[in-house]
Image (cartoon, rainbow, N blue to C red):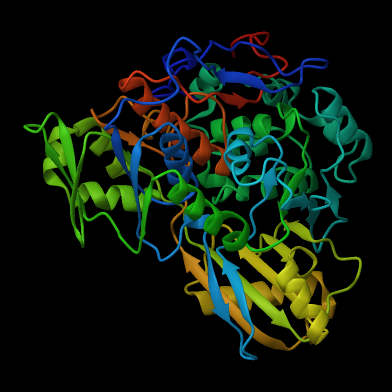
Length: 530
């Protein structure tokens, strides 16, 4: 059904990683070690080891934390005024003089984000700032809501429970679907799935399942759009991989948490202090302008900034995908010195813009409204988060004013500008939650930007790897091809740690261990070739 031009990196190419062949199955749903510690190697690095990390989002901070803890003299460069990348947050003053911290949009901290949570435990070993959000409903103005939480973790029990309780699935879906194609969801295997389905659009795969329009809309399309793409523009191989990662192969089940306060207060300000404590230098508002090889000086790189150049043997490029592309475009000497990585940077796929609008309303939404809701089959609106039921600062503002704070998110926005996106999302919200139609907007904060990666059909083998493609340069971010299955924030964190591990390996120190989900589906290796 498909073919793959590049292929994916294998687990046995990762320093310290055992080869994993275990399946997701009942009684076997537990985290797996995907990068093992090596007690034979020292934990700390030799004196004088240094590194420059470009990008202060999840990937860059994860790399910087691991390196700084091991004794590396880290300089972290972040172009924005604050750390965080797409999880970044910054102060914002409301018309009444109240200062609140706003963000790029709601993020779900899934419980199988083992690497990201391990990094966050540096700040709070108990992760006390995270609390359960309470559900994962999918809303539609056409059909009754769907809720994907509370299902068993192990396949096929999770699928059976879904069929038993879902209002979107009926006997026609069970007996009228293409069982051979549907079984591919249970048979995820990195090499086979990529080879067969990477070139296939997710929309074509979903249509081929033969399920009802309602089942497609409520169970698959809303899920697919959360990866910043329309189903026709997402690889079916990526869709199957993510369905395994978040649902069929997830030892923790579909459940997630969120911080009970803003990201700046509970994550980024504490990480800045943590890095400072471990001797790292954090420079915000300091973009990397170009990258120049300095191979005559013991194979080093010069990272040009507005305040001068930094020369280093170890570079971690943990930018968003467009910035990685732009950095190499501004660095012709680096393109010549690192042609393979530069070629991948040039073709890295950037998703359509996402739009985020936070509304401070003069009244509350109905009490039965969930804190977070995915939305299906609306032209623009993809999710709604009631922040005044999620985090303390918003709850305090709502309690004082009698209003509410609601965030609207469009993951792959087709609106011509942010004002149009906000207007469309507000109208679509009013159709779903009629009580918001007459609510007055006390204040709004809106953003529209194209900084997320996307994974289009035919893209396997074209994405940067964490290491091995340019001497002295490592790459981190959620656009990076990790050699084991990850997604979204966990992909960013894991790639950052893998980048740090490659630095540690070069100087003779042991790797940071990483855990992941079972890497293969229940039926992996059991289906015949078609």
